[in-house]
Image (tube, rainbow, N blue to C red; front, side, top):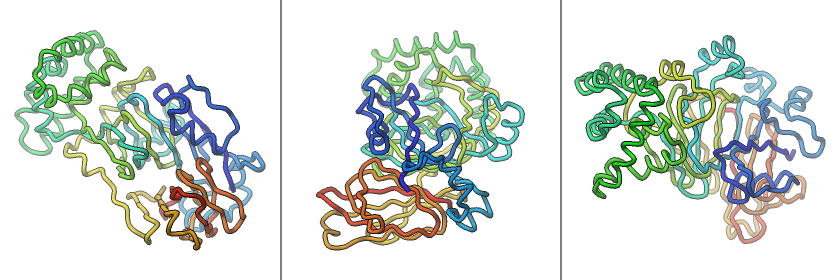
Length: 407
């Protein structure tokens, strides 16, 4: 079944036809692109904040699942009930998203029970991000402590807003547990500094940057800092550049972000798959509510290189790969069928024991089952056990991403 999917026009999204999300939306919608509008996210799934509907009937996908329970796999129903456990997205990021983290399942239930106005569902939100169409930039997890100490020693303005006692505690920390506690104190002190003090320190550092040598600017990642500070003047989140790992994912590379991992996407296009939730705890780089106390108390303060978040894809055959994060809610597969290799031959996607959603990201093909064309931007729902066989058409490779429950 082909789906029509919701577009979210958050302010940080790329505008008009420059947005991958806007381009994809044309594959399953007749609504024209508005060039000045931001197109931030395409949601594929059943989440009530952006539910997909069946294109032929306009029936919400969730309603269809409730009346056609055989669409879901047996193990999927046993673990998650009669709804999809995942939310599949495409993102087009023009400027940084908020400094954020997502609660674990127990914490999400507590936040939903006590503050449903801010936290809209009781589910956790582990997520996997995969870069598409070039480099994707992000901040992710706390840097190695040695890096943070270096920045605190080199940037007096940052040390001033963190505070002398917190900085000294981090410098003196020796064991891993001492470093984690000291890092918690430093980051919490930074986030709780008055807006006036933060803005003053940011302005001082911005004014000092032009006088630094090229080597020093590079060592202090001044280009990255300046880009973010230009978009968010006076925002405490600008200093997060010096606490969190800066990572650039190349096309096709992936990261997994578990509960309580601080992160912020900065620029680029990506695909995301996550548990079906929209719970976000924010504390910077956003005009939205900043729940600083909750964020600082819940964060994972384990410091280290960003490589610990990277995910590897496994080869199924010469055309298909899969990636399975350490959660049951979702996994992903991707298919690249070269046009030249399939001129006289159809390809059958591996049959999944659970329901799945597919996104056509490039190329043109014909479905052997329906005899209909599949093209860029189309989103398909396959019920558990359903076969899809495709024949590539034209001169472009066919690229498809697929999301499904990992049980």
